[in-house]
Length: 322
Image 1 (tube, rainbow, N blue to C red):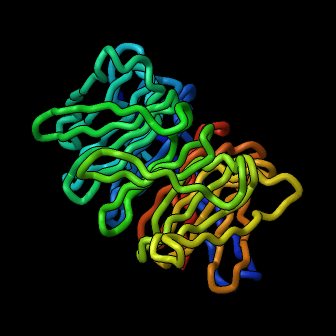
Image 2 (cartoon, rainbow, N blue to C red; image 1 turned 180 degrees about the vertical axis):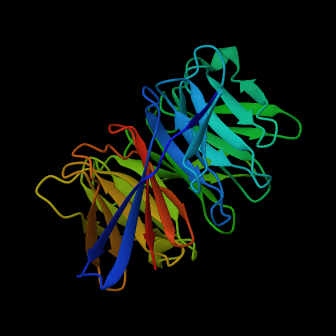
Image 3 (spheres, helix red, strand yellow; image 1 turned 90 degrees about the vertical axis):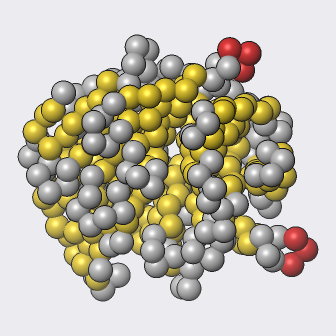
């Protein structure tokens, strides 16, 4: 199904940042409920999204605003989406309890069902390590690995049970995930598939998403505490933490993404703002969507661009900066 939509252009100048931030909005068809987004690294390349409400994978051409919807299968409800090196899109599909791949050229769909004895995983997000292993999380209390070439898929019980949510890999390929219900960050040993539990300094913080910067520092979005935290695995004592409270009276930090300048971006839900944090000055900048309720659940980007899926407003939004 191919739908052509016109992009809506908005431009704003934030004098505090002394830099131009151009915001462009792309409306999506009704009922999509885009949950996650992933931008191809090529300039003007396609932007993929997970249509959680409609059971579709989606692909946006940012040059024309054209949206392609790809049905993923009966009962599909995709949560996360990432791209492989060849441009294929991989979805963690909680509705089908499966990992689903879409070929970027033919749009052919292939799926790997989780083992029946794994139960319902509530699949969330995924990432590839340097060896090409596809690691994924399930909020019901699992994490897993898929070897794409052989099709071997394994599921493991997560420490502390329920909670595994966001996942990412450092430049050296080390995979970390966040446990929302467990309030910890897990580091996966790829050789043994075991997890080391790393406790953030704030008890019960509700670690929701994680993202690595170019130096291998792991940034954590804390939902319960409203903090943005940073973990340095090479810090004193086997790892060092630093924490910053997001602005506002009752901040809720859902998503985190680190851009190519090593500045983290977060989605703050209390005021429904996008925020960019400068580690050098330890200050936040805030950018508002044109929608009163955006509900940004995940952030991704490429050089000079940060992309967000607004699940509440029914659009994708890109923040372009110098």
